[in-house]
Image (tube, rainbow, N blue to C red; front, side, top):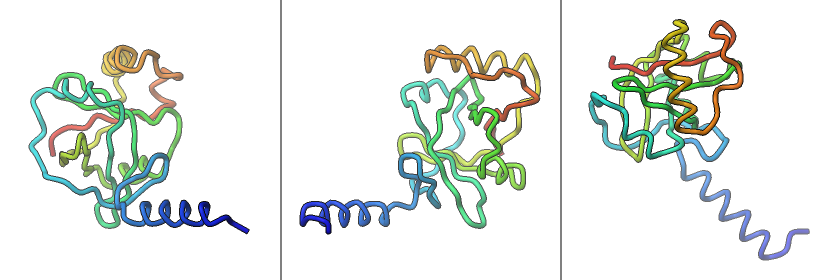
Length: 149
């Protein structure tokens, strides 16, 4: 039997979660909301936030929280070797929306397959997060470049 305090806490948590369309911590969400802006010429401002939100599958939006790294006019997302739902969604439809500090950017995702480009991403990832990606074999991992549509 739950105590009154536990019951109220559970009710508040469920209420909070049901009011969110976007992802919540590690749980995926639906459509992201916010004003839409043009993709910037430089993503350096993204270094100020550790986690961004990414929405895939425009027909039935699916959103997640993820680390992102800006390198000049490119924004990179890294899933490691995990072929997750958002990776499958991107492979089916490259159109994504990325939310940074409440602003949405409508972008197109492209898988990084060039070793030199991956090295630039990995260097920036290490500077931002203090560690390099665990696996640096480009054929075994999923790194996506977010660019203008």
